Image (cartoon, rainbow, N blue to C red):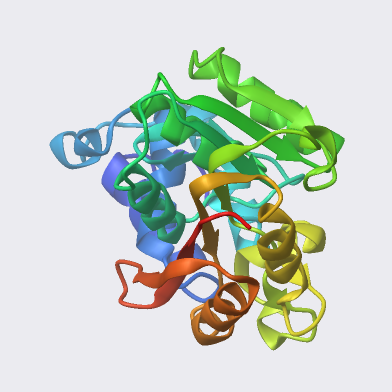
Length: 285
């Protein structure tokens, strides 16, 4: 499609939709998100100025983005950003793209009866989305975020700086190794929990995300169980463990926490009414 034959916002969106409709389940949303990024405007602009004409450079950039999306590259990777908890997070291929479902973990954590100066640990922080969202709401919390992958630590630090939350400590650590002798009032984690043989790993955005951030052994339970077990040595008396998991894993995760001695074990549903995270309280040995 040449620029001369096709140039207004309305026409550009229609063209993009026609290009994406066969390859994306969210063709309309993708077309809008990518055009907004090209124009550096808010969503309302598209509907207020449908007859505005794109410059040749803008349309060329848009074409390039639409081609990438046709190949399956996630929108978040194309524009380098994803909003989470109303905050802009830089994203890249080294970590998971923050999911809206995970906001329920943040919301649940904020609703816990924790002290104003609580010590909180986020395991496997990735972009830093959970830790930095919590820190933005509870600036007095002592927040530590860890990830095993060096590039993820660098990305989380970039987001920390970008969001101006300098008090969040971000460390490279294989689960608890960097916090060996520390106790926390709350430990949160969205660990890898997809079964390594899951057929969905060949579909959609996850094809472009690191499998180490997605999959775990033992039908996806290996990391969840490891964290649940080792967290008992790092939770202060009355402290909470809060884990995100797959929607079919809640019963098994609850049973594991009960077996390990956690009390007040409960599962929280996400906005789609799927079992999304499970918490337990540690009363000490």
